[in-house]
Length: 355
Image (cartoon, rainbow, N blue to C red; front, side):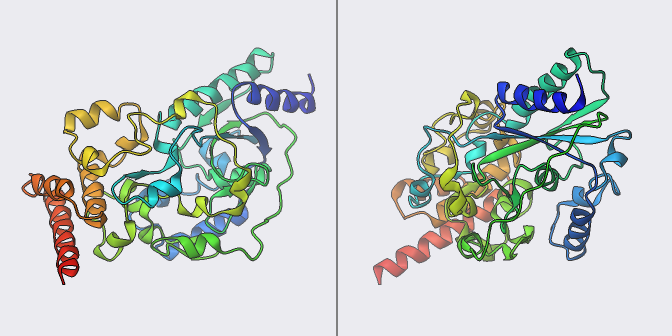
């Protein structure tokens, strides 16, 4: 089998394994390296210190895995078919909004297993190759790599967009020493649209193609371990884990397809759960119900912190007030501070209504 045939087979095998598209890129990421350096120099990564580690391994794949010749980039749709409509949940202040990718099983494990099976298929076909599979598991610039592999372009919100599939998909990679033929990148089709910039609740997209992580709800609710900045709490609304607003309004997502992967289906009713119900979970309940889920990322205290803010933004009700008061003396300073903020906000709302 020649390399051209092998590349075609790899794409077919990828589809058989549940990926919607496979592309192949080279290892030169010069433009992406320049953009990353500028972003880091401006401090737009906030406390994401891992973005500054590893030297040039993030932008120079051969430094990360010597001998790498090509990168096989794969995308998989994740939007659950049966989930409650995202816009409806965001409009309902009593319910929790969780980023659609995190409603089911942790995608890292699913994609990694499928990519490993794809790598095994290449080996089983009689092609010995050195390789390594990545799914957010190392310093890898997955979106510039996917763009170089022809899977789409990085939109103004910095997510990858595909003309036929929108942006509700996940990415993973296989670094390989096989000199496969590379795919052509596609052109940018954002045009004059600025829907994502205008809709961002905290104006975290500070310019087209530039995201300030320090203003981003996904950063606050998932990556950060400290207090959520007071100036952004009201804008969080009922978003307790991540934020999809920029994807919801993107015109290209009219072409997005729902996933058929059962692992991405919502668990425990998380697509439309009441904030008060989630806030009442004990640490043991949280641990059991988030097993194998991306929701574990901020930890239990981060979970309570996020929901406290959402309850502060929720319509006032006896259940909301009772839930907050029940956590007002929590052992964690972090939780107590956010609960106090929420109770104060609820009181201001009631005072305003009374007047």
